[in-house]
Amino acid sequence: MLSPEVSLPVNRGLGTVPFKVWHNTKIVTAGDSFTYGNPFGPQESWPKWVANRLEIDVVNNARVSRTSRDVLTHFDGDILAYNRVIIFAGDGDAIKRVSETDYRNDIEAMVEKAWANNITPILTVRVEGKTT
Image (cartoon, rainbow, N blue to C red; front, side, top):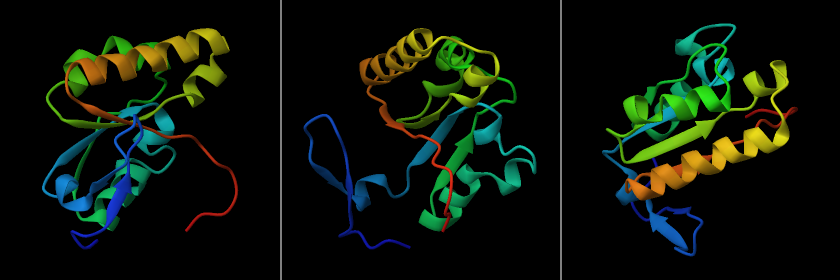
């Protein structure tokens, strides 16, 4: 487990936040099939890895075939009960050929909705190649 002195970077001009602020907090993930854990299932997903690695509760609310618009549509029901959300959407958008503009607008709307509800949004991107 990370020590309470470890600081995690936080954007939006806040600098860093001590890890103890994150400890004993449930984090929810929102996204598409990659976040859900396809092709192996939720027990082999990156949210499960994060939960195990950081020893925190991570609720995986991702669903197969979701686009960023789907995630935004279900945001109120899936996310508002939590105070931290990791958003990873885009694979479903690429498969369904959603425009870059629509994708960007949906992600920005999720971030704004999160901030408006005192939820810390964490955005992630897929990076091909080496994994640790």
